[in-house]
Amino acid sequence: MKTPMTFKSAARGALLPLLGFAGLLGLWALTSAVLSKDLPSPAKTWEASKSYVVEPWAKRGELDQGILRFAWYSLVLVAKGYGLAILVGTPLGFILGRSKLFAQSFDPVIQLLRPVSPLAWLPLGLVLFQKSHPAALFTIAVCSMWPTVLNTAMGVRSIPKDYLNVAKVLQLSRWKVFKKVLLPAALPYMFTGYRLSLGIAWLVIVAVEMLTGTPGIGGFLWQEYNSLIYEHILLCIVAIGVVGIVLDRLMKMVEDRLRVADGV
Amino acid sequence: MALLELKGVSKSYGEGKSRTHVLDDINLTVNEGEFIAIVGYSGAGKSTLISIIAGLIGADSGSVMLEGKPITGPGPERGVVFQNYSLLPWLSAFENIYLAVDQVFPQLDAAEKTKKTQFYLEMVNLGHAGGKRPSELSGGMRQRVAVARALAMNPKILLMDEPLGALDALTRGNLQSEIERIYQQNRTTVVLITNDVDEGLLLADRIIPLSAGPAATLGPAIDIPIARPRDRKAMNQDGQFRTIRNEVLAYLLGPGSRKARAQKREASGASV
Image (cartoon, rainbow over all chains, first blue to last red):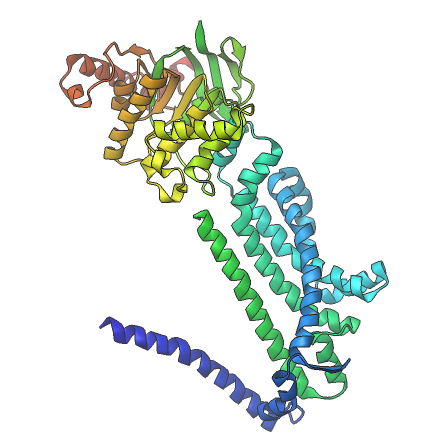
């Protein structure tokens, strides 16, 4: 009785997503054929994108490079901005989680800044730094650090009181409390924050590259729009989605490993 | 001289209308090498009392002295075994104890610290399980590690806050014997908080009932002049055991009960 059930559910697990993608493709094809003549059909998109996908590392010119090469430029930029977000966001989260005074002062500020769009931050970055590269990093960092800040703070706040009491009885130094109690207790939460932050950093990259004209997957998308090569817009959207999923899965693996290691 | 002395200790939580009077006029003297048990109702303030002795929270009034000096904060000379969740889950049993050894004996070198840690692990019969994380140990084993960690602080007094409260009855019995054996071996002064009268009768030299809350206070201390180690099975037949148990229960169900305490407060016109 059990085997056919699992077989059935496995088949479902593989078939249903395929069905979903097929539906999406169908809708796309239908839209391009009936509703919007400017939207390239899936077949045309594939035809125009083939060289970018088949030779993903090619560099035929500044504006004409394989899709993975473009994605790599974007990833490097994201890594820098995201690194900055973690570097600033993690200690901020710790202070927020430890100090009630600090939390009461800055929670409203964070709530105010958190929903601001990257499109709003970038001009401010340009005003502050005068150059597009630091402005891009600033925008990615300031948009993506909030989940890290909030999750770290939550992790620190939810440390069982008994652990801190043990630290008090032992009269551990501040540094030892941090190293032996706060950090390991907050680590799983921190990584949840890191994963969410990375998702946002990747989300922001396209807007940032569009506005600054930085070479990368978002810059390519915008440039191809301006050159009226709409097939490549669709190629970029798919590529951005795929890279996003891969990043999320990788972070999830690290996160799960940490949870298991901590016995949480 | 008394090792630990509490005089007129009171404690309330909260402000204004939500203020609750937890402990009222607690007087307690513990002599060196003595094993005392404080038995009381759940939620009566037993944990608050042990936290005050540990220095984790301050009393509102009264004095708490260890060797004649007032207690101002927590410290390893008062080792605490908490009821639950007190082993750091990301450290192995060995590392949990080592943390205490490392902190209390900074002058030792690494090899000596390791030896000392192993010594305490073996004292609680867990010499083989040092590499295991708390999540891989049973509840009873975890509490044994917690006892070993508290002893590794080389405390003047061992404070145990319902250390066996979360364990099943059989494990509980085993650990009671273990605590007795460790006490015989170390003769460290012990204050054991429990909600189990028989646990107190089995282990303590002196048993003191804590009345029901709010404004819980200690009842009359009762000596247990029965030779140690005591036989659990004899407890139900032995006349002396039964007399003492009845005395403790008479207080807890009589003058120490919630109803009697409330009536007394009403009579004295005290607002709580």
